[in-house]
Length: 457
Image (tube, rainbow, N blue to C red):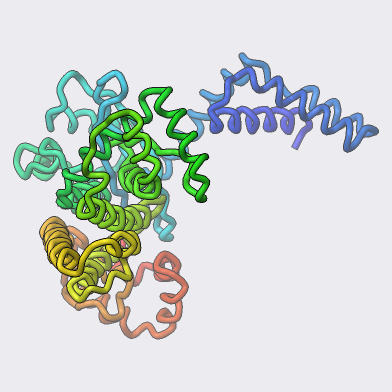
């Protein structure tokens, strides 16, 4: 590579780093100065390297022009990958920005013919004033046309579950299924969104309302906030340093706020007494037990939420996490009924101050709440449970049911059954499954089991 090409490549690389770090464009000159100083110290006799660093163009305007070039190259590569893929799926999320303007985020996941999986943000498109299903579909189709996506290769659409999205007739899913240009596809609800909706069945407003009022009273007034932090410092018991504000958009926020509130309960009581704020709940042992129970349950739900997050998460991984949690709820209920609070350490700590009769009554109530949460999970994820045979095939094809591959996962069900019999006899492939699901299907990418690979995608 020529020296000038190397210098230009370095300029683009640094512009890329500046853009990814969300730094101002004029940071380029600062970076260049730092590079010059480093070279001067590490290699003062290397005049060639000094000239190359000096020739790197990183002015404000240069970085400003480099970034659109990088964006076009990335976008072009993404479109090429999707066009060349064997199959692809999309996830849609319609929301409003801080100015209440609706926009549609479209994520695409593609599978190449050698089972290489890629997942990227395809586009964020502003919607019109209204967000009807027809508006969402038109916007999605425009994004597909811009990327020149092969719609016949679409295998699944995941949505956020709004009526405009999942309506079987007039929703986006219904409109797409009625459109002859679309193949048969799976429609899925965002599993994380489902989990958050189900968690709302833990109806303990008697806890959340006073906690949010107290937290807002402390955090929204600067004087109160300073005095509260001083109280924590005076107590000097290894306590957390502050109370976080609750943000409904951040799904893990509620559990963190309640956990910190329980830890700082003594400091909260002192401040409320100093401010003549009457919150009898803070001295009510039953209410404190409710708070402790909610802290523990939200801790379990937050762990589930975190396991569902991350890039390139496979559907079997998500399904396994959800139904493992469903089984954990049955265990939690049985343990609470027996008086075993091993999985509820905060509740165990709070229960030491109440009588046995009160504890038994509260335990019965908590067991009912856990049971209701379990039923909500089972009801909400019933459709996913029905699809588990097909999903299980992806991670354990050797023990899957022979007739599990149905349309729209495969185009020829009879051929898929024959291929599954052939696959079960491929003894040399069985050790590959222990290496990982994706690695296994990469080794299967030989054309002999095309229908099974279609189901995998």
